[in-house]
Length: 279
Image 1 (tube, one colour):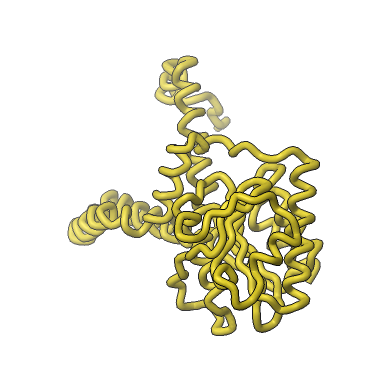
Image 2 (cartoon, one colour; image 1 turned 30 degrees about the vertical axis):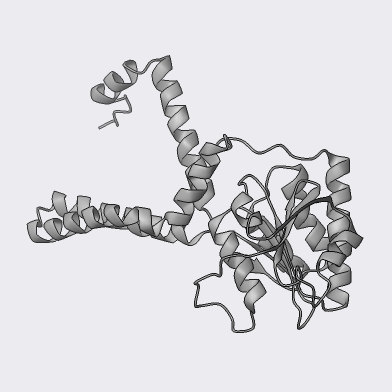
């Protein structure tokens, strides 16, 4: 008996009702969902999202099989889960709301032109190389789409043009600004001696000190790129989206800094992949 490859009548009826406005509506929703996924990608929240989807799938299956007791328990669990979501996803919700408030949910902030970006990256890399060679501890926060006025307000306001010598002077040991973080916005250093939130991740290596934990903590709450120079070993690290990459060389540092100043943000997975190839 030949197979019937024709479109089912019900499905054909649904397609016939879709107009141009419906297509636009679907595209907008798809763009928003993609942006939400992009924000959650490579964060701890993506694991929780997968868990929620599994729970919902199990609930649907139990309802279909008429397993009433399990279905009732799962429905109550889902209700409690949605109440707890604002607490569990607090950093991600804050990030999304700040993007909306700044008009950057679907677009990127204004970036430097290629020449300015190259100059800033070179100056930062030059300073980090010198700080690493002398084992001078440093914490440098690169602002991206999300504003960091709340972070810069905890330190000393500077607003100076970025140069290697300027950055090295900021992190001179035994000075008031040495132990805090410096915040970079575009081609200017807007503040130094700033306080950062520490990560609560207990799975981190005991080798990571306060600077590294502060870098990870801030990167969990916003889209900033945080450069760390270890005071004990001179090791150069970068934290982003709650992850940290260590033992970077200057060329890898430059490669990771460039997208923060002059191009769309590179995927963190791609950065990790390139780093592993070089290490």
